[in-house]
Image (tube, rainbow, N blue to C red; front, side, top):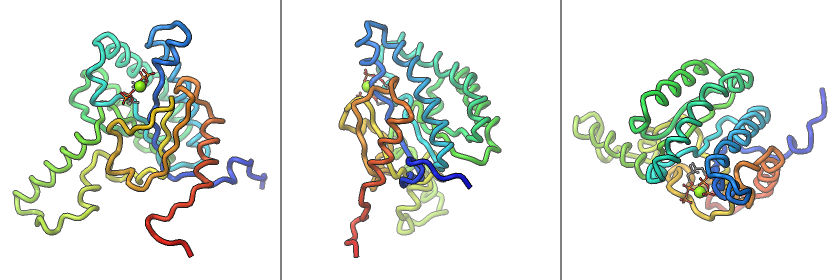
Length: 243
Ligand code: IPE
Ligand code: IPE
Ligand code: MG
């Protein structure tokens, strides 16, 4: 049996979430249009997916487009959607090769029919893969997700199927967009921003946070390994006192 490499000996999160930020700043620093930053971000996505799958993570959730991002200029949104279409087609072999199952979180009905169709195709094509789950948060907002969950729960209470007093934390978790995904152990945000930007507010109650100054298009597996090393050094107490 071959010896594990140094990074494999560190404690790896079971579930990771990433706020992929700084594409615009990366492009501006190079005198390029913002879309070039988004384009280069694809390489970082591919490398992160492959490395996380190789290390045996159960789930990787990537924040690709927020509910609030719909307020960006029309041209940027349309280029981002084109890029997403390209990603969904061109990255299928990468997902298959790495046994990755694709799922989605967000208000899918806001997406154009073509993007939705490609997303559905990639989800269907990878549905039987048994390795890591890659969750793409697109048109995603955490408060919107909670509103959708509350509405679904309220409908069940109104129909008499559920009693109000029987609503537990796990009832709310069960009505989120991807109820089967484990809560993230680690959240990485790139480009130095210290905020959550409406991402996974319910799911990250006890998630370890890691912010790096690296802009997303420059994010590579060594940055992932740095984040995992920082995570491995954290003491997770979940409110208890350690013996
Ligand atoms: C992240 O990069 C990508 C998306 C939000 C779609 P930004 O586009 O937010 O880049 P900055 O924050 O302007 O540098
Ligand atoms: C968060 O980044 C959304 C994604 C990474 C998709 P933003 O760049 O949109 O967030 P703010 O505006 O800095 O909070
Ligand atoms: Mg940003």
